[in-house]
Each structure stands twice: as structure tokens, then as C-alpha cells.
Length: 169
Image 1 (cartoon, helix red, strand yellow):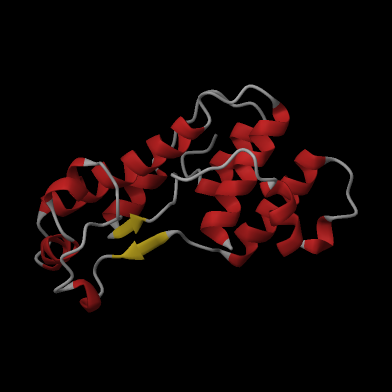
Image 2 (cartoon, rainbow, N blue to C red):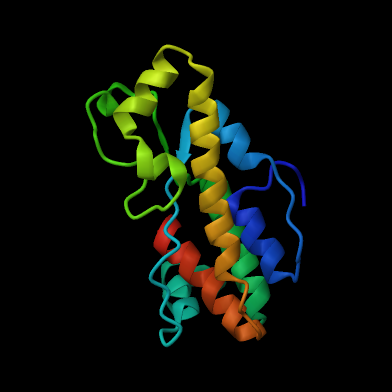
């Protein structure tokens, strides 16, 4: 994969069977003060998430290949340039004591608030990038971890569709 593999690129790579993903995307986001806000908990395999995703993007329903349908939907999402991040440098986070991402178990979220990271970025403290990078890498790690136990193509498509529905809809 390219070094700028977005979340959509990662999902498409996993769908295509990639088992190694190398990217500096989470780190480059962190250096700009962008914090990933990706939902990776709550997947229910008993729900047909592919159908949920298709209902949002009804134009690709006529295509019979399920992988191609997901790829086209992903391409539409990339065109819209949907993001799953927050810009920690915005003044609205100045007094926000919440963690970067609720229920995140990364070092940054367990020990620091949004307001503290806002402060670090405001004064250009080098730890700002480090703490943001720790969080963003944990989010990417959680995303990849979702796919660790997936064995079938249908299960993979359903999981990819869930991530898209929950985070880009």
C-alpha cells in the first residue's frame, strides 16, 4: 500500500487480501493536529451491514460483484473526502476535559484530555505530535485488529461495510 493509505485505502486493501499494511498516514495526521475518531467497537456479525451500506449508495446496487460494489462505494467516499478526525487545534477544545476518543484505551486517552493536547499544540510542544501519534496508531491498530479473526470473504465484506457505515455515513 502507499505510505498515505487512508482508512478507505486500508479497508480496500484488506478486502483485496492484503496482510501487510505500511503507512505513515496516522503519523502525518498527528503532525497536523488531526486526531482519528474511528469507531472500532460494536460490530454485530448477525446484521447484514453490506445491505445497510448499499441502501445509502443505491446507485451501485445493479453491480453483481460484491467486492466491486464495496470498492465503488469506497471510491465515492474518497471523492467526498469524508474524514474521521477532529482538529485538536480548534479553540472549542481549549476547555474540553474529555479524552480524544471515548472508550479508547491508548496511553494518550487514558492520561490526557483534549484540552491538554490543545495546549500542547498551541505552544508547539513536541510532545503534542507524539501523544497524537500514539492515539492515531492505536486507532489504526484497533481497525486492523478487527480483521484478524475474519476467515471468509463474506465476513470480510460485512466487516468492511460496517466500518464504512459506522464511520462515513
